[in-house]
Length: 114
Image 1 (cartoon, rainbow, N blue to C red):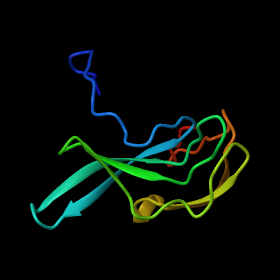
Image 2 (cartoon, rainbow, N blue to C red):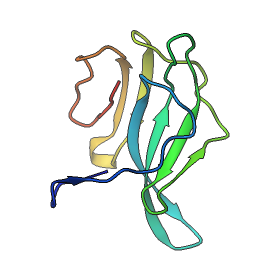
Image 3 (cartoon, helix red, strand yellow):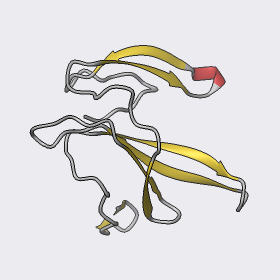
Image 4 (tube, rainbow, N blue to C red):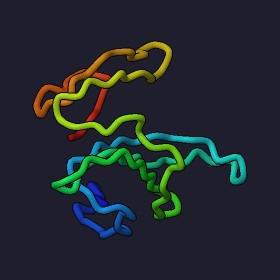
């Protein structure tokens, strides 16, 4: 993990499922047990050179642990796939179709990485 204040990197635990070409994004959820809002990294999809996967893993920044979601992507995703993106705050809600192509994922409220 990169600390921009100190300009340093720190290694975090490895993902449980080895792959490349996956999508990642940040999300926040309310943890009812602790009463805290927890920031998590969601990593979904990917491939290993022979196969494409729909696996979804979630990394808790608070606990620094990966867990595998019981739900997978409904379809494996690869370059050229179209996905529906929705969410955001009421004043800047996004509901769009996006094609997964390198260099063409631009929107002020959508941050995807492939």
